[in-house]
Amino acid sequence: MSGIDPATARALSQRLAVEQSERRLPSLAAGLVRGGDLVWFDTVGTLDGRRGGALSTVQTQYRLGSITKTFVAVEVLRMRDEALVDLNDAIAQHIAGTPFGQVTIAQLLSHTSGLQAETNGQWWERTAGGSWAELMAGKPTLKFRPGAKFHYSNFGYAVLGELIERLRGQPWVDVVRRDLLEPLGMRRTSAHPQDVAAAHGLGVHPLADLLHVEPEHDAVAMAPAGQLWSTVEDLARWAAFLAGETGGLLGADTLDEMRSPIALDDRPEAAWTGAYGLGCQLWNIDGTRYAGHGGSMPGFLAGLRVNIGTGDGCVVFANATSGLGDVITDLMALLADREPITPEPWSVDSDQVDVLELTGHWYWGTTAFTMAASRDGYLMLGAPGAGRGCRLKPVAGGWIGLDGYYSGEILTVVRDGSDRVSHLDLGSFRFSRTPYDQGADIPGGVDPAGWH
Image (cartoon, rainbow, N blue to C red; front, side):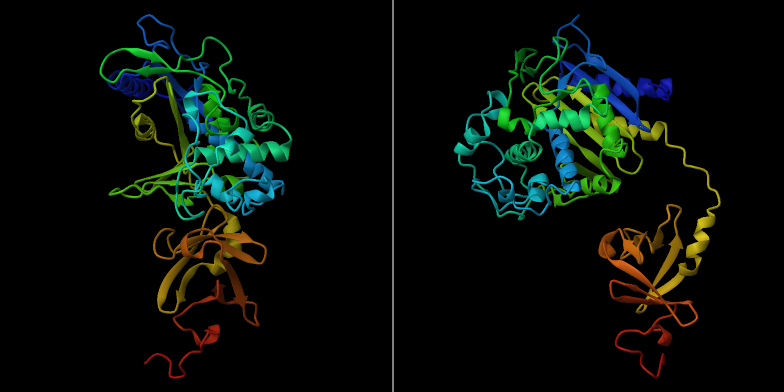
């Protein structure tokens, strides 16, 4: 670990210490990621919650809870990219005999399937799990019309784990280990704690300074919803993965798809700040987008969050059933405020000569837009996020919109007989150099009287 000023490290450690003390957490461990590397780590408290007990380290295993879902989702998306499934496939195409065969893989990934949240049996998080057949014997049901709303479903991820097993021919956890954990060097991430040095799962009495040991078990068919254990060091590598350092295991476009909001997490009387993508929780904090996931199982709390724009990330673990606050937000804010990322110096980009003829003022009807070249090889029509402004990415035969109203729409450059740019066609909307330019073939024609 390197790159953090000692004063910044002290401020981060102070914030962690306050969280552990005020929230009454036996142990609390956290790490910050920048540029794909773990640049800061600290821990407070002891693994058994007693004075003089063993301390956590960067290699201490904690249970991940629902962060497990991000690994399951990545594997499903890898299968899609290999053309083994389509996200619009009904689950009945791959798993027969369920009472919810009409729900799609995309709906399961985004918690919009309408499936019940939990099992119909005993509290699955504290009891030994059963097989897929036993899970189906509980007669799971839909609580909402598929696609109607966001309804978090642990049960839905049990279905996705079964999907992986049927298509890959191995248990989901073996597939995740082979395809993701081993290539990324995440050797301390596993379905069960690897040694006695792992954190104890503890419940803290809400009205007294007393502890209760929580059980650890195999959830079997429900395991894809929250089985994995990991460490700060390993989960920091996974944070770097979700920030873009995928090691070639997932394409950039697929990662963007995973981190794009599909369903809003609508809370009564609260502003919309949370959403869900394809296996990722998403946050919008004052316009800054974050991706990751929270996790909880009896005895454990965990969090992973990355800033999609900067790539900074944070991971947090506590061995308590409840009590963790929003320390992950504060740690990331401290890093960003005290050690802002230095922007790359400006320099000439001669490749922009090729698109210079497209820059300048354009009019859609009477609405003015400014087209500018961007350093990433894109065009900028107006300002993304403002009105119908968007980025445009070059594709074969034209440009494709990446934002807002024009997302997915194709911009075609139309030239006149002299090979000069006459006008632009964006999803059938005509953009001309002047409002209702008579030479731009405006649909519906232009009044012969012109402007008067």
